[in-house]
Amino acid sequence: MCKLVVIDDNPTDHYIMQRLLHNNYNCEQATYTFDGRLVLDYLEENKETGNRLPDVIFLDLDMPELTGWEFLEELETFNAGAKKNVQVHIMSSSIRSADIFHSKKYACVNSFMTKPLSRELVNKVCEQANPLSNQHRNIA
Image (cartoon, rainbow, N blue to C red):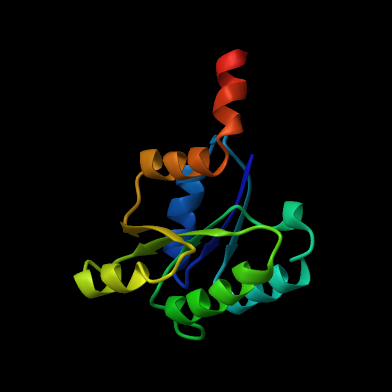
């Protein structure tokens, strides 16, 4: 099952994501935070234990303390030495092509999504992060 973290400074976006994930059998655990620094600290503390790390991070770019871009810089360094690479899916209100182009420089970024996200898109991300869930579902 997919473990994910949502990093966004907007409580409304947290609520929307909670609603999108409601009854999602591909997501076993979702954590919501306004502070990317807390996530980086958690990743560093648990980098030797891959099963404690999230599979997916949904990341907003425009945040006051630690921007999404700063978070990505540090995550790239983390992924280089960790037992598990964490996937990032940027979720942004921005439709600027410069932001989309800039996001492609980070190996950890899997996609750039424009808010509001859809249930289908979130489900697809969770399924791709955990392909075995589809096999188990098809067998049953």
